[in-house]
Image 1: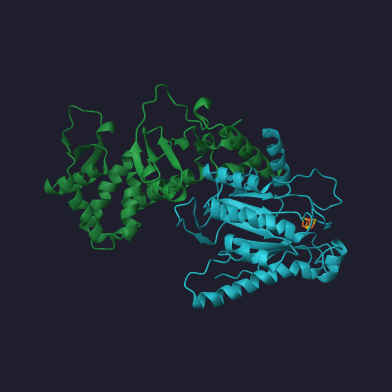
Image 2: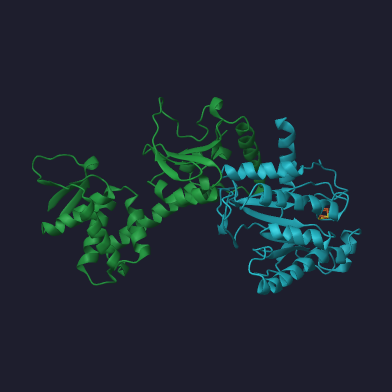
Length: 248
Length: 256
Ligand code: SF4
């Protein structure tokens, strides 16, 4: 029984590890409900990799199954690799048990797209909601949102995550068509606009109501891959944090 | 030169400062009884810790130092270093004997020594906050033991109480033979009588007292740690700078 979950973790941590973003700072979430954890101030590095990088988050994919075929992504459909998928409960339990043992500061969750955007996003939402509501988890959560997911789901997820970001594989429409023919640029951009809108909306609401929920306290970031399409700046495949940080 | 022997407590140092003014002592060497080797030819004065004397000195310091400096004073004391006891004694004299602001004179060797020791203790506190690894016992308590360079339990108590408000935990200092126990309400000091010598390595609790899931999660964590490595970029020098070898025993991911 150990073996199956070990294998899943191995596959889904490995698939997530080349992601560039690594931060659990900039959040200010106090433990106010006598639940567990706080993500105040800068994150703690609980350990360091043998190449000297800080490890503070459990960084995994929910699944590396994907219906798309983005050229740079190890999870792309056409790549011949082992596939796995966590259940919602498995991610929640793993996060809680790592956190309780003082291994990590929180969770960095992303996912390949199985079935469609909403189907996947709905599961990510269930995970963050379960962590915050059922487990009263106050640690750090960074969620990579899913292109093409509906605004309602994104808005709700934003209420629970400390940070939301989105993978924009290609900066332009042409690049996107070339590398991920199934995804339109609009699809990718939509969630980001949505986060931005919600933040604007949140600001408006705040003026009227005293305690609106925090919508993504640490802001959002976008990750782009530059270097594969004609517009590349010659460097090959450099992930760029195109940060649209909007701090509240 | 007079030799003052005190009991190793903070009250003791403060009382010694009080006594030295009362006795108009000029040069004092302060040693804790633990480090004192009786010498027939040296006259000694035994400091008896007294609350009201200690309070007078502490309040006197508060009048001249800001909160940050008071914390520094306390944290340096937790280093338990014989030289630091002397430094703190001399530092108190330096502060009382000079105009306000003397604490900013880092050209003075005791000012420098106290603030440097504060940094060291502070770093150790941070390391413990990062490197402590709990094991869950069968009765649901999260247990970790440590043997830090300095007496940092009083400094890390708040951090763990806030973070793990909904789980019972124990952090035990093997070197100083006391621990903290959080019972979901408050943190208390505890001591244990270990029948056998506890090994200072992390996975020290015998399997039969652990929660059945403990093995799984420590295994998964080890797996996870291994998977985060990018072998092509291995740089052990940098790695050891972040995690000095003497801390490896805490880290479950480092146990084979
Ligand atoms: S949609 Fe995401 S997970 Fe799927 S192939 Fe593209 S980048 Fe990879």
